[in-house]
Length: 331
Image (tube, rainbow, N blue to C red):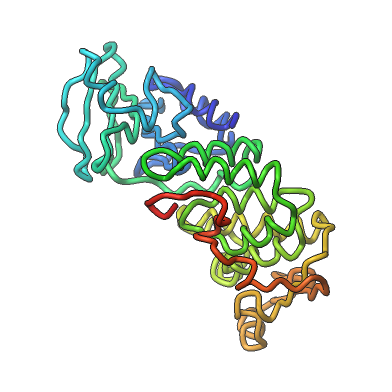
């Protein structure tokens, strides 16, 4: 995605504006800890206001100074510049090389498999005002990854990341099936029965499709637990920790699409009373302004095809239809 491509161009020594131009020009350098831009990048800002340390965990197709995630350890050992540099605060092995006076590369190796897990670029001369550099991060509420970039590219990148190391090529085949072959009804069955621990990308992709069934979108909306992630904070994203941003952003994204009439297909039935079990009167009365937070279109009844979930998902595993061979690690 363009967002990742832009992030991959960042280097130590660049001004903070190089980052804020990508993630939002109103973003300010955090005073107490490095900035967790997204799951794939954390940035430490030095005392001069420049980028001092960048910890990249971008998808493997994005190469940083010749290295990328999932690259085998053998490639690191074959490079005479690199030497063992101890472990990080979580015990992961690190190999480091000083490339120039202002650039050091540190490669964090996965603790279980012999491949690169993270590529860090560091200015060894930088100083920081943070109380803690390793393991700490500042709250950042400016970035919405649910609405970033091209959805097909996002899903393909996710599949490429998931496929190696025992998780099988079936993940790639599944992504291709979603994009090119599955009907709206087949996608509905797969998506509403998806194991969210296997990745959020299929969910995002599905609810962004113009032919997505309204029942699919509404089911995912209520499975996202909008009571905890939206109503409890009265729709204020800044009240969440960054770990909750995805759920909030997905809820807001679907909510707006429903209210805008984005979902025009209504061939699958939807019964709001069975959506998640949180639609009883006791819950409606618990939240002030329920109908403002959740207008009627979000809990409408749709008369349509009633899908027998047990029969439709026979042979499914974690949301994968039975025609796709899957491996270990949740896949």
